[in-house]
Length: 197
Image (cartoon, rainbow, N blue to C red; front, side, top):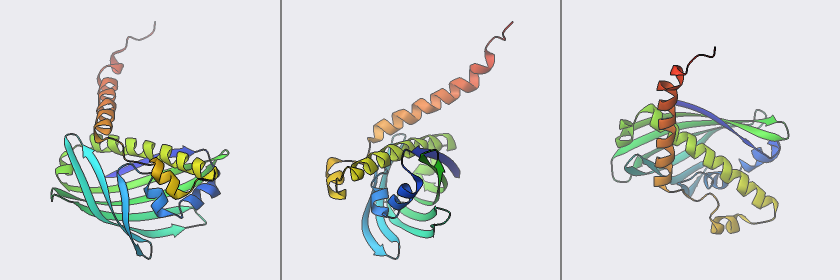
């Protein structure tokens, strides 16, 4: 399943690209994600906790940076893992490309996601909604972390303050449900608006 999204950061593109050099710092901005070990050569062990409807899953696996193009400001990460309770597996290729947008930066993200087991039972809409919520939260956390670093806070201080901490699985589920309901509302009710005379 291919999911494309983008977001903007109110920082110059060179500064944002430099931020992407520190993968543990970037990972700390993604709700529910934690890198647990640096394996060297741009490869990491970690875990990601996610809630899909009533099911909370925690995937443990590896993330490997397979491409980093400084000139094009493009990075590709291959990640794969299995749920700790054996309820499924996930594999994802994530590509991010940065470009200048006014005084800020546009980050275009493409995710190629493959799920099996319990997580695979949810439809594309639910998975896309959860992904969109995570990307929005990631963008907010990244902006906050960059602002704190600019003010002179250390990475340790930011981590201790909880920047980039995981959001409640219930909160994500509720937000995803709201997005799904809005999509249904638009699909079934908006076409029936009376025409203007």
